[in-house]
Image 1 (cartoon, helix red, strand yellow):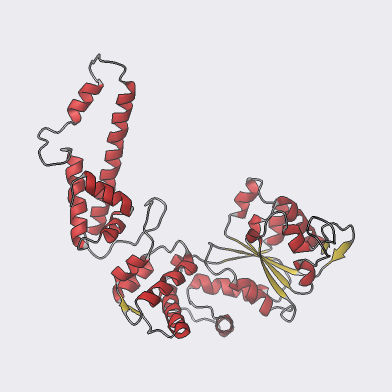
Image 2 (cartoon, rainbow, N blue to C red; image 1 turned 120 degrees about the vertical axis):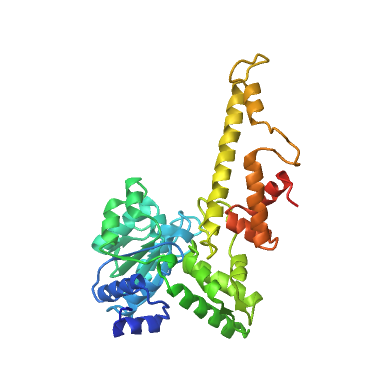
Length: 385
C-alpha cells in the first residue's frame, strides 16, 4: 500500500520541481523541511548526480533566511591556490594579481546561506578557516590582519565517506562533527524504484517541449530495463540517456534494444553495472557459464606462464614444460581453432549470443559482459565469422 505523502512535502516538491515518491526520497525531504527553521549546520550525503543540490535550497527557502542571499560554491572546481580568496576575500596586493580588495562568499552571503558542494575537496588549511567561521563567525581576508564577522548558515554536501577521509587524515575530525549536526542522505537512483520511470517521462516531456520535437514513449520492456539498470551516474546519467533518445528517436516508442544501445558499453564487468537478464530463463545460466569459461582460461594461461618461467633448459623430467604442453594439446586439432574443450564451449556461447541478437555485436557484448573490442578479438581467435 502506497504511503500518503504529507501536504507540506507535496508543496515542497511542486515548488522545486522534485520528481519522485520513493520512501527514501520523501524521508530526505522531510528531514530538510524539519531542520530548515532551526539554524543548524547540515551535511547532505549521497552519490554524485543524485540531486543533492535540491536540499540546501529547501533548507534556505523554508527557513528564516529565505529573504537573504543564497550562494552555492563548488569546492572541487576552485584551484587550491585561490580557494581561500574565493571564500573569505582578499586585500589589494595580498598576492600577485590582487589588483584590488575583494569580498569573499562568506562576506557576500552575510545573513544568508552558503552551500559548500564537494566539501571534502577543501584543503586542510581552508578547513581550519572554515572551522573558525562555524565556531565563532570570525574570519580573516587573505592578506589582512583585521578580524571580520559573518552571520551565515552553512550547508555542505559530499559524495565521499567523510569518516574514512578523517581516518586517512584528509579531513579534519572537528570540522566533520561541526558540519554534520544534521545529516541528510539522498538515495541513489537505483534505490528509488518507480521514480526512475517518472523521471524518464519528465525528461522526455521537457526535451520535446523545449526543442519542439515529437515526444517519445517507452515500451514495457524498455521500462523494465530502465528499472533494472544500476544507473552509476544516477539522475544526471538518466537525463543524458533520455535526451539522447528524445533527439534521435523523436516520436517513437522506445524499445529495450534502443535503450540498451543508448547505454555505455561495459568495459569492466567487475566495476560497471549491467542490465539484469531478460525473462529468458537461460540467460543467467549462459552468462554464468561464459564467466566461468573466462576464469578457467585465465587459470590455464597462468599455469602455462608459470611452467614456462621455470623451464631452464632442454632437460625434461616429470612435470616439465614438455609434459604440460603434451597434456594440454588437442588430440585431434582439425576444426580450425584450438581443440581445447574450453575453446569449443566458448565459441558455442558466443555464436548463440550473436544469433539471439541477429548478429548485433554491441548487444552481444552487453549480454556477455565484455567490451566490444574483447568480443572482436575472441571472434577472430575462435574463427567466428
